[in-house]
Length: 251
Image (cartoon, rainbow, N blue to C red; front, side, top):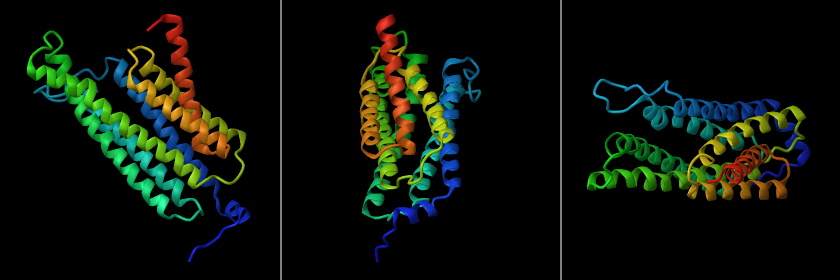
């Protein structure tokens, strides 16, 4: 039996604690971005994990620790959006759940492929990349792992935006809540800028642009929903700051 819930009833059923958990899980992503930046740009994690030098800490953090934190927060956010909503959880919810899991798997596979081959590329193939072994390592590092990552990245983030529309926040947002969403989005946007502005732009630019267009389109169509504000802020800021930097300082 399908239960029909009026807007008034839905508003009454939504708990302010649900909004707090959304902010907390988005803040976890902000902390991950900060730690990723420290891990990538500083010298604090360049030491080897073990005496056999199989990986550096920077590689292990990027491959295992930080992605686990980020993907766990994404999964909890996905569950939170659905199960804190009074909306009917039908076929679309199950379909999006399957797509999300596919995205998580592809993202995890990309990290496993990229970080090890990136380490091998930098350590053994920087001076002579022409051997068959180095050619394979470099292909996995620079191309195949990136294709996997961007596919997984689009799937997981697009699913979260569509879930926000499927399970909308029906009460009005306070200025403080909008401010927290924008602040967390700004950190993600700065992370996008850091990854796009200082390197040769490739597929990553089109991926971010695609998600930005999706976020803006859904925001225009469905109004001020939590994740639509968050993603629109993040990806538009990342694109605008990158474009400004490239125009001022060149490719």
